[in-house]
Length: 217
Image (tube, rainbow, N blue to C red):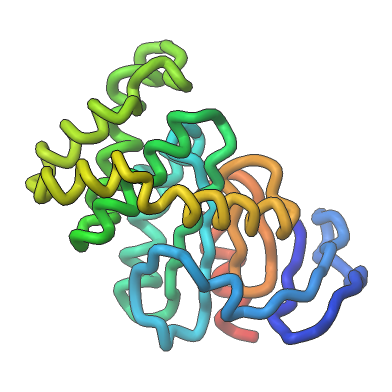
């Protein structure tokens, strides 16, 4: 696991002992506010623990986390005010990853980021991954489809379409992805739980162990 220390420091890395059975944690310095900036959030911002997720809408493992593990984290920790969840785009799998991330942010402009977020992952899983098909950059998230999804979810279509066509959030998606790379993220999903970077869609029990340990610090 990798670790992040939230501070205003100017750089440098240190090594700290790791629990038995886990590799030594790598730590870097980053300002906590910078980590939160530009993310899509869920929960109470005054919660004692922040979890940042960095994900790509074309990533099947991200989809599995979204539908299997995230609801348990939300129910146990976010709804109870213990965790503030922040979603950052890490759109690295191709152009349709960028289109999808932009579209979700356009939905967010109408207060429906999380609904659109869930719909994207479900659509790709139901129509491609669950059927053993490749769902990456094959047209699933072309702009016309993304507009249809918005209509299905009851969004204001003219406003959504204009947002997507004029690439209102392209710079936001690019900045979010660059932030992930700066943090050492190279694949998805990636998570920053308090001060620790965790890679992959781990079982809920493992997330629970890490979260509980952070809440007691």
